Length: 147
Image (cartoon, rainbow, N blue to C red):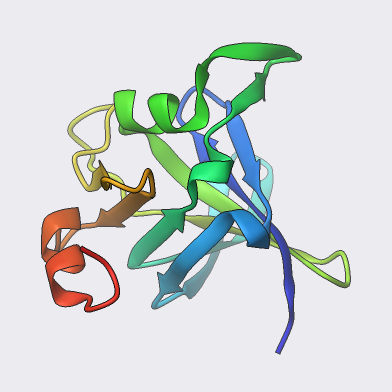
């Protein structure tokens, strides 16, 4: 088992946000599979894909973030909720190794992912789900520790 040092969300416009374990509540990235194949003219690479991502962020994570070398105008939660465009996550482990995992994405749009849904509860926790099969409301209703 490897301890996670940080989780970085990567967005369609190449922005990213990094969260530390103390900012994260519930988290899962399930059914990770690998594919090795040609992805560009001169590149044969290994890619990791997941079937579903669920992330709970505590209110302490809702801060301005670095966006292309400058502080953002929005907070992290405003950005995540305004644009449904998380394309992948990069998990950094305590030993410095990393996994970059691609998320389910609909092919109907280059900019918006219909498989992403989010919700902020009355305590200020942000819940994000990227799944082809479920939405955030169904996941939260199934969890006893979240409402």
